[in-house]
Length: 223
Image (tube, rainbow, N blue to C red; front, side):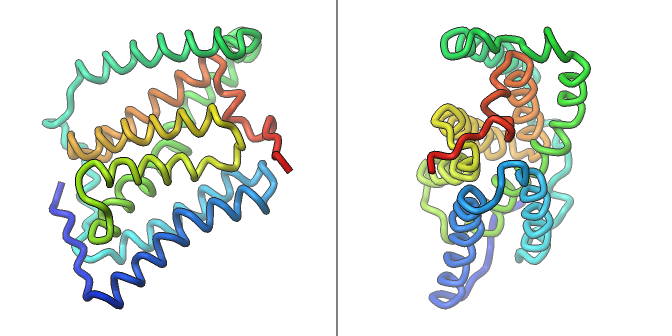
């Protein structure tokens, strides 16, 4: 991955980036969660993906070729281990918190589960990784905290972006996922590798029944 060298002229440009960051990653998710109906989740995601593409395209030093596969940095053993660990964890979790929902789609609507498996990587995992990994680190690199602080901030805004579900389970899982996907993106230097991990996680979540927490039809606002 090319050097993340967003060039800014402080303090005006830095303030502008901070304001833009706050609007994109804090204000917008909050307004969506409070004002928009839950079934607007995908229109909102696609709308923000379009805006993110525009912002990313206008980011100094960024080239779309950075999103190439970078096979050499991948770890197939790591992917296999993640698949196993994620599966075991999600099966155990659903049995503890909602045993009645365990493998619901697999048992009742396998055709819908197959459609989710096919569509989720492209319709959800890919745009989320573009917004919360590539855009986050490439455009706003100059205003991010150093070291682990950037990872924690990334996980926090990724979790906050799922506020529309109003669920502590979703908040916890997306925070943990944010840390993992950020590590994959940075450590392996591959956007596609992070998308694959994200897609594996999402497809397992829906397969074991945890998708009930990520379904807009089940959202219950606390107000």
